[in-house]
Image 1 (tube, rainbow over the protein chains, first blue to last red):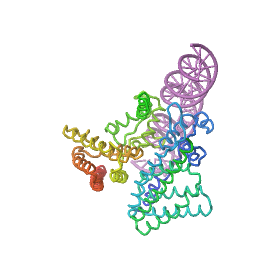
Image 2 (image 1 turned 135 degrees about the horizontal axis):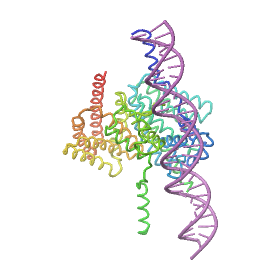
Image 3 (image 1 turned 180 degrees about the horizontal axis):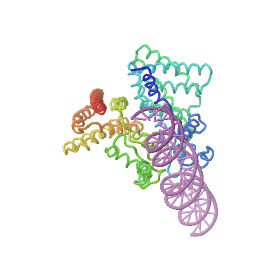
Image 4 (image 1 turned 90 degrees about the vertical axis):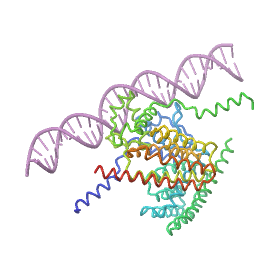
Length: 236
Length: 236
DNA sequence: ATTTCAGGATTGTTCAACAATAGGACGAGA
DNA sequence: TCTCGTCCTATTGTTGAACAATCCTGAAAT
């Protein structure tokens, strides 16, 4: 193999990462997704087609295509002839989400020994990112770092599909978190757990890391379920 | 509670199952999905928009909406400005699919004790359906029954999201199975394993059922990976 | 106060046109 | 004969507009 062929090989390898310019619908979906997980669009908000496509400067068809993408991600729900609205997760959704998270994340941690190179570093990077955010008292960034931590956990599998499912679940989680009035009190305690899990993984103690993560998920789920129960008792 | 109210309750309960007439795009997607998993549309086939929407008698926008649904299910892949084509799974996809299946199905089996009522019966029904198909030498139906078995396993979680992810994975699996020339030899041996797993679950031996299922998945994956390797060596 | 019915508004679906892009055809030059 | 660059065509991406179907609102009638 010559040096020139080597260069061609590398280009072919990069080809997959060379992202094409996203379509208009994807851009619109991304914009809406950002507003939804930022909380600018509260759960339950009805999204009028007419208002949105005039405001965003895209065609109605393109907007509807973006809606389709987000409905698939469960960030929007569509009621026929009523249009779409921002999803409003229920306590049943919380339980459901944590069931899937347990299956995927615990399986990922237990298989950490076969993780692709660099995957564990991503976990560590997410931990450090969270600590920086906490030090800067940036609670929104702390929540993001926490999401990234769990995405990195899923990344330990090296599986494209696991990563994608996880990405979707975490986007939904952002919606769920909106019921937590105090992001600091909610997210901060998990920083230490994240760090501990990362250290256990680094030392090859996968099973113990899995146990810690299981506790972690149990606690978080309980906390969210309680918050939902309180809110539902409140609004009724 | 009066009898009349009872009737209303029942109507409200049925309301969720009362499926609205599916939209045109969903019908088109369903038709295409059927042709893909039946093998009428071989992996790699390019789908021309013009030809399809004239043949199906729907608008181009509706067809594109159906494409979006199937792209999301990974049954179609879209190359910008090139249109969509039937997905052609690689050996990497097979490995990836089985990783997710292991995580979800094993977790479902281990939690079988908390399964919702009737979920275990669905597993048994799938086993019997497979045995009927084998007795009738209907190998296509046998493959379908096998899919239903694994869907029922996922259903043990009672989780909407697990069920949906599983449904998607199984649709992809249909695509993968196309490389197996002999559906009988491939699917038939798993009948006994399905029955054994069902019996173990019925007896409450969830952990042993999980071990059997893990073996099952290992064998099937290896068989498919070998088949892919043979095909790739063949076509090159 | 309850019911009925008409009006308006919004969404579902289709059609038609233009812009943008990828791939192939074609020819010039070495 | 082979390589390179240019143009051209077919297909897709995007937009705009129209009509049909459905739901919500509110006024009129009992």
